[in-house]
Amino acid sequence: MATRSRSLRVRTLIAGSVAALGALGAVMVMPNADAAASTLGAAAAQSGRYFGTAIAAGRLGNSTYSTIAAREFNMITAENEMKPDATQPQRGQFNFSSGDQIYNWATQRGLQVRGHTLAWHAQQPGWMQSLSGSSLRQAMIDHINGVMAHYKGKLAAWDVVNEAFNEDGSRRSSNLQGTGNDWIEVAFRTARAADPSVKLCYNDYNIENWSYGKTQGVYRMIQDFKSRGVPIDCVGLQTHFTGGSSLPGNFQTTLSSFAALGVDVALTEVDVTNSSTSQYAGLTQACLNVPRCIGITVWGVRDSDSWRSSENPLLFDGNGNKKAAYTSVLNALNGATPNPSSPAPSGSSGSPSPGGAQRIVGAQSGRCIDVPSASQTNGTRVQLYDCNGQTNQQWTLTSSKQLTVYGSRCLDAAGSGNGSAVQIYSCNGQANQQWNVNSNGTITGVQSGRCLDVWGTGNGQQVQIYDCNGQANQRFSLS
Ligand code: G3I
Image 1 (spheres, protein in one colour):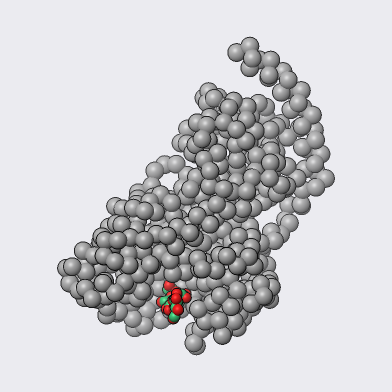
Image 2 (cartoon, protein in one colour):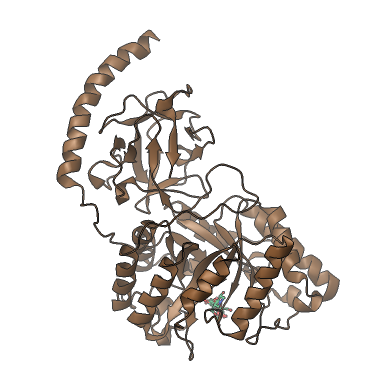
């Protein structure tokens, strides 16, 4: 107690000077309130959304590729590495090496990961292709259980079922469909039981046009699932605009109609022939106009990385330069208004679920946890400051318990003892960068078990970790 009182006096003096400096720095250097974000991920985060890309494990060694990917995006999908042929090449023998390579690369940089995909007629391993009937049904269940156990609690969403419909809205005939019309709901029920914390999505292409037969077929299935309590949280619209398919005028209607069924929607594999700027801007704006459209993923980084590279459909050219379509998307994202947060997936607890960027507001001070002067320098201590909605006060709770800012920096405890500084640092996947956001308002360090704590309430007050004591200076809300 004596030690704490003495250090309190010393800290009060230091805090006073720091507060003055912090406030001065903030006034002089912070960007103005409506400053535009300069990367896709940060721009999307302003409205609580993400902006993602597909990643191929084999390309991560290319520094142009990985530099752009880590800088611009805050949601990652494995392009092929989490599919059934990759994850269970022999029956009963799971292989997560490539999937984990992508998962680790992403989470070490504070990026979230979508899982793609568990049950699909394509990219099945040879042994699965030759199964049918009840043995295939069991193999599907075993596959879902095996893969989801490995990634349990780690992913933002899973594309549980992929591309199960024909263009006319009927079910696609496949070996999976041959096991019985209930195969899709069995897949979703299995998935919910395997990992109750992850959002479960149905994912398909050519479901962007509201008046198209396939769109209506998928819509009816989601409607049926919701009415019967089959667990489903989201619909992924792949948004491949190619081969005569382009941005439909009713795209926003499609998104809002699905959302009205009580699911999130996301654009999951966007690419557009010759990167039409108007189509890219339009699809982005449609998502921004629908509160439950939670994010956009493009299907690759540079044109040369695309599965249809001859059509130059992505946001960066083969040399890694930003294309005009990039600017049209960034501008649209920067023009968005804040998004009301979407509900947590059913089956999750009362604690905040991973998702879009939020403020961390002190219960005692009413002030926000802020990175002084919008610094991105490793080791910059965070402080309290008047909430202003800028990116240096926007934190994303990831599925791996990180609190990220600017997409690539993590809230980091510089030590584990009482009084250790809380700072920003490049995300590295370690326990001193993991936080439990608790229902009693405290935020505790996974490594230290101690609480985020401030000694005062003023602008510039620095944040530390300290033994949890139940007081208001250790309570925060994410909002
Ligand atoms: O890795 C092998 C390589 O060793 C071999 O030499 C080469 C010869 O063809 O093939 C390589 O594998 C290819 C793999 O991509 C990696 O590049 C496969 O043949 C090729 O079929 C595979 O294509 C993928 C395709 O799904 C398969 O269905 C694309 O990369 C991937 O972008 C694409 O993604 C799908 C989504 O999952 C679902 N929606 C549609 C989307 C586009 O088709």
